Amino acid sequence: MTMIKSGLGLVGLVAMTALSFSGVARAEEEREFGYSLTLGATNDYIFRGLSFTSEDPAAQGSIDFSYGKLYLGFWGSNVDGDGFSPAELDIYAGYKPTWGQFNFDFGVIGYLYPLADDSLEYVEFKAGVSTEIVKNLTGGAIFYYTPETDNYGETYTVEGSLAYVLPEVGIFTPTVSGGVGYAEETGDNGLFSNVTDNYVYWNAGLALGVEKWIFDFRYWDTDLDSVPGDVYTGLSEERFVFTAKITLP
Image 1 (tube, rainbow, N blue to C red):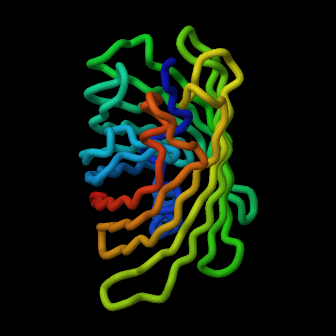
Image 2: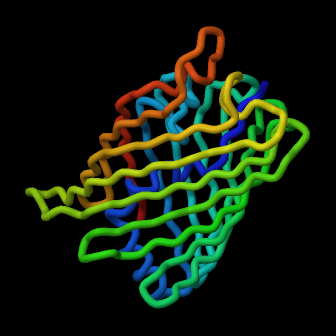
């Protein structure tokens, strides 16, 4: 049994970025070409409620380019998993059109493990939409589809998130946010457990923004019960995660 992720690590904490997303998006539309570099660290690399560093810390970073509504990016992290270690590199590209007050995101993601077995690598497609529901409250939904490969079954994942920007507190701009997701694998290979082919995950937390920094405090959990001998469900239990990152320039 092998485990497959069904989404993008770079945006694994979708709600966390709500603090700066709208302002960055507007600024990028005013100039044709844009770029950014993000560096960060976390006490546990969590993806869809599962730890991909065996509950150990991770150093992560990304570089992103945009041209109008088109984007291209690269994201990396250390990982510790069955056959995936020691590093993950994600390459993603897409198109972000707008329609009225709705912002869309259509993209493709490649998951690479350059120092591990390349048969574990796979591609995923995504389609998402977000909007400001009322002032300072943003909501979004995103759908991921992973085609079947030799190692993985066909996988569907859907996520929803809400984020609310609070009044400034001193030098900080706080944002409370949360999300819930559902993943299901339709093939014969195990997705994340030896005992089930679907699960629900959720998170809730507080992000503090100050200048180019974001400090995120987040609770994660899933409905996967820990099963003796099943390493994947053992990494899906409730946990608190702290993440710090800086985006340049």
